Amino acid sequence: MLFANAGHQPPLYRSRSGTYRELEESSPPLGILPGMTYTDQRLKLDGGRLYLFTDGVTEGWSADGRMLEVFGLKALLDKYSLRPPAEQLERVVETLVHPGVRLRDDLTLLVIG
Image (tube, rainbow, N blue to C red):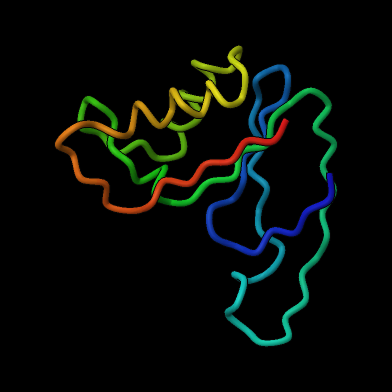
């Protein structure tokens, strides 16, 4: 796949074997500087999955009252890695959205693969 990374949370690529790689940004955040160009990057999914997410996901709170952070997100993605992408995302959101608990930020999570 061909993409450009314009800052913020680095996307995560999870290989078929379960190892993760953060795809660091190659350009400043979108809209910061007028006329900015962005570098294309290529990624072969090869049976893996690419996760794009906002900081509202990693700053979300798990049921035990801890901030999820990147390592917690990876653990959740691993826990549900054998499920279809849509179901995997549903399970992650269920972990972060609790009755009576107000979210501090948006939750945006996209899976490709």
